[in-house]
View 1 (cartoon, rainbow, N blue to C red):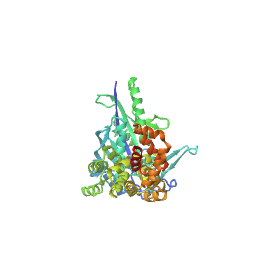
View 2: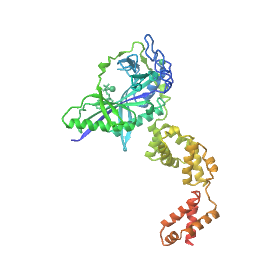
View 3: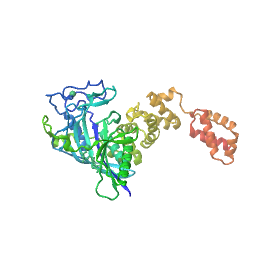
Length: 476
Ligand code: ADP
Ligand code: MG
Ligand code: ZN
């Protein structure tokens, strides 16, 4: 039998507000343990929380960017659970009246467009961090993260493959970064996702029993976890047994997931309205004020790049997937570079250098204008394309203006004809076999001779001139 996978995601994003959700402690990542806390975020008796308005601003912004309805009358609720990472023994979250609901995000997988429903986006507080067994005698707790504001984005079970879920996550991440509500650093836990997954025979309407997987901390891990879980569930169903509804933990090192606990139901949490906080009333003016702050979003930017700069769809998608990369691209173009040539450099050498050095676009150490300058040097004939690739590498190492690098390293292209003739002469003398081959009709031999001249000049000879010169000399 053929099976289909059904996936719904719950994504937590830490908001990049300066202060926590109910107190004025800093949200900064790291820091000496237990120094970013106060009586409020450590849940001391008798303290009162006050909602940080920015948290609601950011949640509205996220809702508008994902086509949600904004709830005009919302409230916060206590979700009770006893675990030392949350000293109050409850988390302030939102139960039935979240800030946003009924939205969607459009994704594109292998050229196919698909709409993924957003069920809701609610605000809540993050918990502290437990460090187990580092002392051998027990667990330690760092409350710095306790009370950092989160939005939880819950999707409809609309995804059918791990690939779709991965593209959804990438698209969501890029939207959240564009609107500046979260830095989405997965390695710092600013973006975390739980995966709900079930399987069913293709064509069957009813969904199967789902499991929820936690502790997935990279997109790559998410895909592996989903593939593993789908396979595990299919095997259970095939053997005539039933999938248990449970929460599982993904171990990315071992590449397996294991059961953590039976799935809790909402009633296990004894939700009730948070009595210490007033309702969240959001009027039209507030929503419109936030709407005005929305930047051009990745999809719109992509469409514009295709229209305005005639970029291939694939290139436009990659460049606009990161707000920083798109800004960088626009800086180059505004400095007068040809958009298509810039795009080729981005897709080729720039991406390669980023990947090889494991760098994020935010870590590019020079401004976009420098790429425009580099391209201008090629256009003016000051350097060749192959030298430009080397200059780009140096720009990453030294963060210097390409004009300065070219001067300092003596990389200026040799375009002096008499100098090139000398070099060509020597190469012709040294390679009689290739010369004979060329004269005998082997066009390829010319390429070899050009290559030898380039080698002799460490890549500095003007390749176009050299090509013409060699042809002329050989055809004499
Ligand atoms: P809970 O509140 O218990 O976590 P929800 O109904 O809110 O449960 O669903 C949580 C997530 O599980 C959502 O992202 C939803 O899309 C997804 N989901 C629900 N049912 C299924 C299913 N049968 N298969 C896969 N995902 C599912
Ligand atoms: Mg859940
Ligand atoms: Zn505090």
